[in-house]
Length: 282
Length: 292
Image (cartoon, rainbow over all chains, first blue to last red; front, side, top):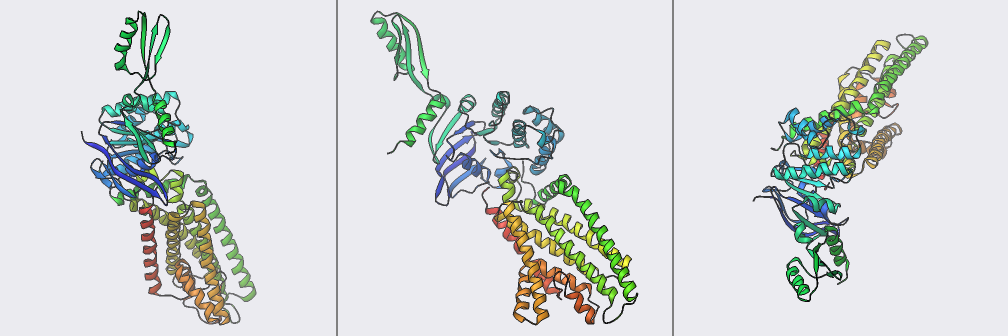
């Protein structure tokens, strides 16, 4: 599958501080990837380099085969910044129209209607930005990022101001976009959100990738619980593969087995453990 | 999506700026303030000519041509206010164009679009220039008409001061855009008013130096006004108000009231064009390299 975003040994330094310390990753078209990490980990810097807003100190980034920041690369992306504002006097329709003009999109009114419907703002065409709640503005931001049909969507904290219903709408939208073959890079602090939505996850800390994989890989089993006639016993280091042997041992020792549960770590557990490991000296 | 031609993007951004102008409260107040200024200027001009006519008669008396003296002085005063208001408008329209808008998150959604950054910059520059030049023209020609109708006096070459004012305001806008690439909006606004005041001071110092025969003061004033050519253009505009007047009347008119008149030629025009282009190129280089 073709790559929507490829970065090779990407380094970004702001004077003496390193925001990125050599990030290499690849996102395939139609893949939904989550980017996790604490504040200052370099997540936004990575996304901004992909968008051409920030120039890397060294290394290389490509969007759909074109150097990041080039007009061709920017023509392939949709972007929602973490901190963004649209002029308050524009209506939702105006905002989308403006971005249609800046992308030479020929979608016209039908594209505007479709995008506003996708983000649940179908009744807000003529509503001014300064009359919208923060959550509505965030949804409008996602709609503007989709103008022109991008191949790679980069969203920096797109659900931070949304209520649960809004998040549900966005989750469904992201899955729909993935099904259409659009790659999505989702930068979020909401671990449950990423776990529920993403195909793959990268965890960044201090500018480097410290963990990556599918949510299932990353949140591997964390022990086995077996309910027997003497109560619930726990094997914290056991995995799913160990279950038959454990049950066999119990049965052989004439114990009655009533239930088995393999326990999984949540993404939050993994994230916190990873961060703790990184902070440990040495 | 395909890359969008820079000129098309400029036009989109320029239209956005025009529309924004009609929404900002300052632009609702501006026409009212402008009508107030023109009304006050008309009243002052009427009384000044009326008083001169009753004191000296229509033809004037003594060493002065009172009609020229009053007409040129009032029009010079109006030019000063016009230049100030046009520059203020230009500064307010552009002081946050790059860093200010980026800090507010207004710029990023536009910059990631497949348009060249110079297209966005050109759009802001053109929109601000068209608006401010139109405003300056309105005030200047209204003042010329008032002086002409009230005092029956018109500058010998009325187009030259108009062009000088327009050029001066465009240079202020170019400098303000440059400042916006270097500083946040508020800092840029403050610096721009200091720069504008510095230019004005340079003009006055140069005139003072000429008046008291201080060559070094005169040189300082002249060099500074060329470093800030909006001031040199303003002085050239003032000079052309009385280009065909001689004697003491001309001397008195050119002393002030607000900035000295200086003769200039094609070299000032060429220098101003080069200056604006250099400032624009520097702004573009800074904007292109800036991390947002």
